[in-house]
Amino acid sequence: MYVDWSVELGADDPVLDFPWGSGEKSCAEENCADESRVEEPGPEEIAPESASEMPSPEKAGTLRYYDLKADPNLVRHLPEAQSSSELRKFLLRINAAGFPLRSAKCDHWFTQEISEEEEIFGAPCKFASYVDLLFTAPERQLAFADHEDYAAGLCHLLKGAPEMPASAEIMVRRCLYADHPDHDGYYFTVYVSGFGETEPQARQRWSIALTLVQHALVQSVKALNL
Image 1 (tube, rainbow, N blue to C red):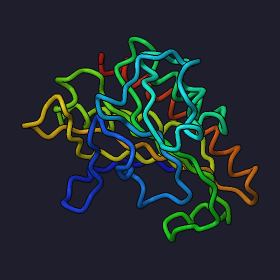
Image 2 (image 1 turned 180 degrees about the horizontal axis):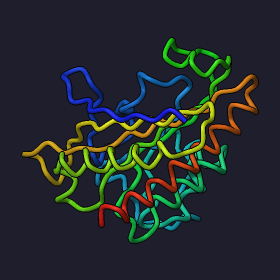
Image 3 (image 1 turned 120 degrees about the vertical axis):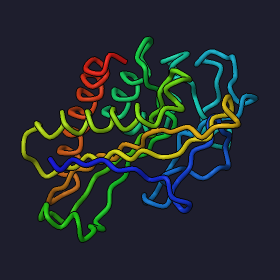
Image 4 (image 1 turned 90 degrees about the vertical axis):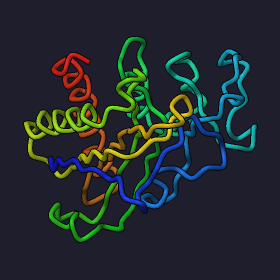
């Protein structure tokens, strides 16, 4: 599995406002096709209702963020989780109580547009996803070194994964936290892709790669004592 991480803090690179409301562009919107978004709200958009009382995104007519950290049952309202059991499991694990990360946005898609860099996999089909991840601890949200260390440790673990036509790329990007208006913070975008001769084959390889990334995220937390 191809693995890499990088820092994207340039003027034209994606920036995440957190929390944020429906209507803002996704941090990864320019890099994906056919996106449907799980979006972070402004404070007024985090509703106290139970999952059973929440309208679905389709009924609400807008995209919004559901705080899975506060109520895991809200995952059933995410279109991405409804269409992908693999992504649903990933989100629930990352947003588990006590885990030092949380998700902000996500998406998954299929495409036959293969970049020049991806031609090394020798396959015409690609199934991919991204998830934006943030540290839950306020002091870590502003610590660039912690993001670098975590991304590097994650890649180190994943480089031990079996050889397969799949990739995992971790981007460290700028985040503007409402709780820290006078300071730049940071977050991760984790891209996972699987490649194959057909969509089912590409999706199967993506599923395996996503599971490997999930396990590596958990192991990296333990290794760095986060």
